[in-house]
Image (cartoon, rainbow, N blue to C red; front, side):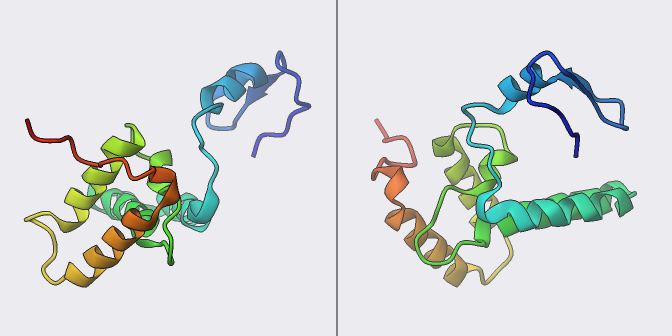
Length: 138
């Protein structure tokens, strides 16, 4: 956590070497809906587990667990996926990507029930305005 006085020209610096002014940092996330929402506990878990992940395999598992938790962690009506904070792309690009990642041909066998719940959540999501997730075939 970097403490500051909310002045746009104030210099911010982290022990890791990162630095920016408060104004630059503010612009980096404004308008991108990068609030933690229901994914906040998974983000905190990631922050705790990442330093111990030394090998590429361990790092990939920590990343995979976080994306999975953000993807599958909704109850009832689905809100905006927290994975939007992690994966570049529009919401309408992200949802088909997550579906393919979790439920595609190379996915773990037996995930059909989970896929049905995921689809029910997507279908019920008011924020989607019933827009199609996949481009129409021509």
